[in-house]
Image (tube, rainbow over all chains, first blue to last red; front, side, top):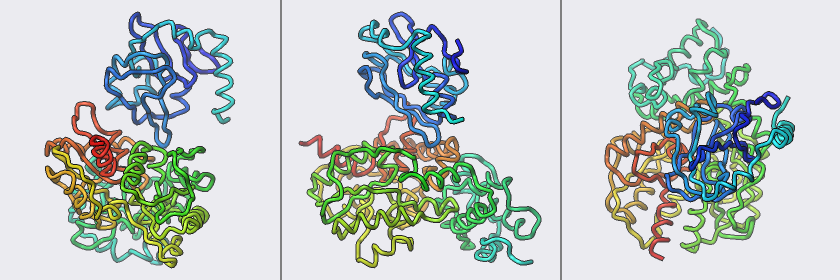
Amino acid sequence: MEIHGYNMPDELYYEENHFWVRDEGDILVMGMDDFAQILAGEIVYVQLPDEGKILKAGKKFAKLESGKWLGKVYAPVSGELFGVNEELETNPALINDDCYGKGWMYKIKPDDKGELNNLMHSREELDKWLLADIEKYVKE
Amino acid sequence: MEARYGFEKKFRDQVLRCSSCGFCRAVCPVFGATLRPSYNARGKMLVLKEVMDGTIELNDELIETLFQCTICASCEKNCPSGVNVPEIIRQVRKDMVHIGSCHPAFRGMNEVLQKHTNIYAEEEPEDFERERNKKAECVYFIGCVGSYREDEATLSILALLDRLKVDYTLIDEVCCSGVLEDMGYPINKGLAQRNIDLILATGAQTVITGCPYCSRTFNNKSQYAELKAKRIRVLHITQFLKDFEFGVKTDKLVTYHDPCDLGRHCEIYEEPREIIRKIAPNFVEMPHSRVDALCCGAGGGVRGAYPKNSIAMARRRLEEVEEVGAEVMLTECNSCLHNFSNAKLRKQNFKIYNITQFINELMEEVE
């Protein structure tokens, strides 16, 4: 679905720093949302930590950069890093080209998939959050 | 014909002295990453000759050529005709800024440093959990990259200084702004004075910098002359630490990357190696070292303006680490450390540290 001009697929869950999470059964896939990739500009570096890293919901576990901007990636749920998109090592701009597809970033094996319910999902929640961030970050 | 630009007035003879031999092409990191003849020093000098002849104009079309240079000085050190390319490029960039033809990233960085106190426009400094602006024998000056991009390396260096019982203080530092001169803009005097006042207020006689560029700026730029006048020594951390004993050793095969700002620009080659010899007897040089060291690709504003090419340059250097089979690559520059860390591929098994960070880790292991 499109919200205020940004593509925000409705089957995904979103955390407040603009990373999305897709439920794929035992594994969750995460990446950067359309709002953030547009705001950041061309992504030039994505940190790809080793698989097996223990993630704690809300704690920083990686970073990414576009030019002079440094972004921190926070774990949307607690669990273990199960996989990373190695394509991003040589082509980080895949995040700009296809942020919900080829530009996916990490796979997580969650401790408790119920934590997905702590993320934003409903149209109403997304609408309010996105509008606030547009006012905060997007210059006319 | 009357000289229209500053570079003609100052460097006409040098530009004409370039014999197009191409020695610079072999060592230019930008050429190595792009294979574009117009991007190496020979290409740039040919373009500038045309400008002096009036055949082409200095304008936006030349931004890609003249702003894409890390100011690493490899060309200058290898030039048999003695052409000082970095100084010519700095002056050309000033001329281009003057006529309004500037790379937008360079213009942006100057704007950032008119409004903010660091090159990243970060509002909140990292804490580093240490008291600032206190009386001490030394000031440790972190620099922008160490403050906002390589904070873990900075925490390590501070922990090392603590372990060595160095009497130091941090200050509420702002960007030294030396980098602006590489981009065609003047050093921000307001920022310089803030640093000077904060340093003097501590009573320190020595300023230790983690960043070789800050060290160069403090030592060589007129905006910081007050430090010299007040007999304040400014040392890069490798100069400061060279006579210390650390009491730790590693068996790992270690190599060292000479940062351009420390090596070619300050001719500090021995001090880092003296320190490394104490902790890593199993040491190997890369095929290009000291004055011939390959550039990491981050300098001269290139990391911000041309990040892909910047990372490609770092990857060329990292291939040499693989070639010599080193398990650890050390350097002592947060810009180099940052660019290499960004460029390193997961399949590359070696680790990258600042020397200080590595020593601190070794000391932690034996405690």
